[in-house]
Image (cartoon, rainbow, N blue to C red; front, side):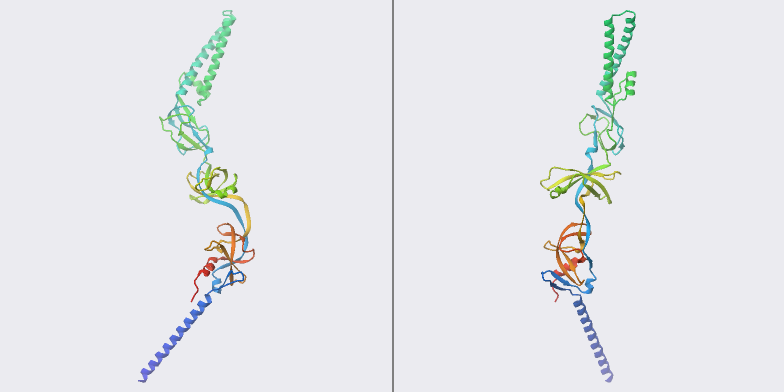
Length: 396
């Protein structure tokens, strides 16, 4: 009986000790919760003031308001294209059927390099006239030489000699004109001499590239009948070391844009590359639906890496960078009503919400036009945490 009573007494003591221990833990947890609860008040101007516990302060970052060199830029999106003013549509000078292709799509070509040949009836006519003119000139030349011999021996009259001289000179002029007519087709003097000496017509007309560049368009199948200016051109050759970037700028930005302003371009294909250029034209009209105007820039592409149709991010430097008051981007909060706020402190324990006016932005910094002054302590990281405290429901 005494042993049962002793066991019961020990159990009672253990239970009492456990209850006491649980009560202490509960009181400690309650004390910690009260210690980490922020106190919210308002200053004389009505601005919210939050008092944070030391543990809460350690979760945010604080730094003095400083200054930052902001680039003055406008950013939009555009597409890459070939430079039309550096492209040449290579039509034949005369009509005819394509005989052979001497360059293919994508080939790099030099100025005056042959691109294709055609069988030209106009060239046949010009060479036929050349051969006839050469024969006439040769005949009249022999007649003039004979007339000179006869004149020396008084075998012909002066008038006959003058007529022979005139005929020879006329024939020489006709031959020269015939040679020039064939030369227009791209025949060299040696090729013209060969036609005259062989008395054989070469109807093959060689069409050459007018510029150095790359073949960017090709529609010259053998046998195709082509004419000057009749689209599509058999070949298009483009200088690909300069590309166009066509971007749509919003209407309100147009007064800030000028021809010659520096441009930086990035494309998804080369995320770590920046291509440089300048604004070359601002188109006169504005799209009435989107209220945007096309801005054209010339972009340097020495390695021909950009491709027409690529989507590009387009940044125009409006003016020289501006040094201004700034705080880190994580220190600025856009509130529900659209206002921008920052949190300041003087003792690193009490934090006051300020409405600020912002200006230029980068990925890391925000220009502050009004609301805080250089040297003041602001929350540089964790401002959203403080703003959310104002929205949290009060604890019981």
